[in-house]
Length: 79
Length: 79
Image (cartoon, rainbow over all chains, first blue to last red; front, side, top):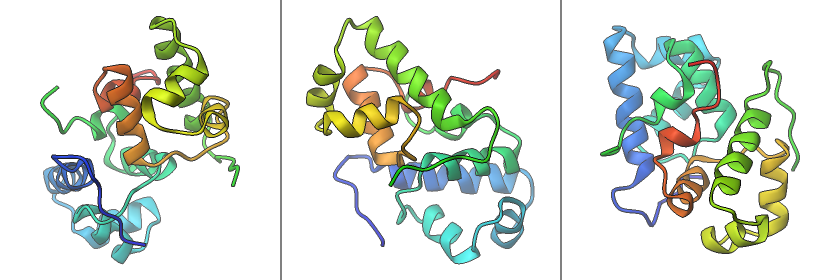
C-alpha cells in the first residue's frame, strides 16, 4: 500500500532519489536493478518515487545489488 | 509478524544490536526509547531481538529519537 510520510523532507523521497543516483552511477535501468535484487520492477519504481516504506531486508538486498554498504544507502540527508 | 532473514549475518539481528548499543550509550531503558519514538515497547523489543523487519520510516524515527543520522543507524556491518 502506498504510504505518505509526515516527516519533512520525506525520507522515503530522499531514499528513492538515492537509489536512482546509485543505480545511474552503475548505468543500470530500473529493470536491471530489479532483476539484480529479485524485486518486481513496479515495486522498485514505487520505492524510487518515494511511495513505498521499504523495510530493512529489502534495503540490504538493494545495497548488495548496488555493491554499497547498508549505511551508504541512507546517506541522503544533511549528515 | 516475526520474520527470519536468509542473509548471514542476519541484518535484522545486527540492527537490533546497534539499537541496543545506541540506546545504552544514552542510558535509556527500552521503555524510555519506546516513549521517545512513539513505538510500543513490545514492538521495540522485537526489533532489538532481530525479530522485526523494521521499515524505513521507523528507522528514521529511531534515528531522530537517538539523535543520530539514519545512516549511522545502519553502521553495523564490516563497512
